[in-house]
Length: 142
Image 1 (cartoon, one colour):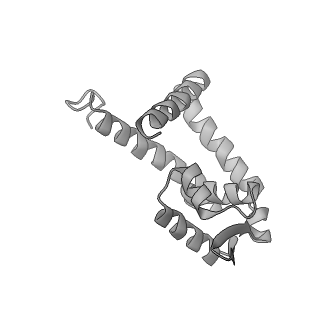
Image 2: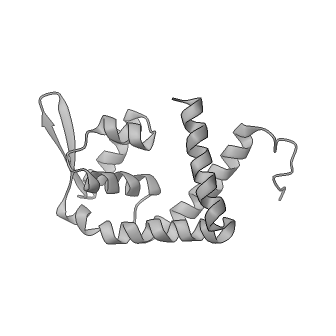
């Protein structure tokens, strides 16, 4: 297996893609125990934190397309973890009691995921990396 020292290592597209794939694998392994993908889990936590949140706000906060958020919500509805209500043109998303009951396990997964990559990178480097990635993302797509 080649390391990051390959010919494309200085290309942000390939470097960020490689990082995303490795982080995705680590995240998926972490959230398996609750039977949700990381995206579903984070969306559910946001709905629990802000009952009645609108899909557009979820899309903006999670930096996902509205259609992706709709698919995530539909899957969570199938699992009876959230419900949508419509008030005129507004759609609101609420957690169900079953969804709320998952919160302690979801928070445990967040902590485990953080601990996993922090153990590899170090706590300071992890915090710095997350900060810098967010800064770069905001610069590229304000």
